[in-house]
Image 1 (cartoon, rainbow, N blue to C red):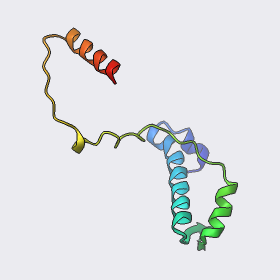
Image 2 (image 1 turned 30 degrees about the horizontal axis):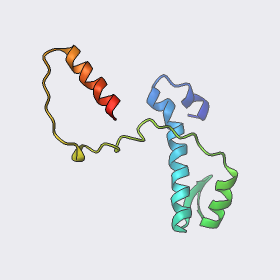
Image 3 (image 1 turned 90 degrees about the vertical axis):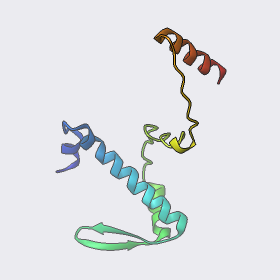
Length: 106
């Protein structure tokens, strides 16, 4: 399956997979550059070792992928850090008022 087929797929997960692979490749290059280690890539049917210096040159010439904030803040409010709180309301209107008041205070 080529890139055009993936981007026109009916499954939204499959459509997004190309962008996800590009983000993963960019992160792998960034990590290899930061740790000054080689990266192993596949060129044709051969495995090729690429040095961190070569990765720096390659990375500077590549367009940077768009970063999506979707899911970026999923660990912002870690569930282990949340304070258990139970509030009961008599009706939905009272709950909405409480949420609005909380948003204004923050």
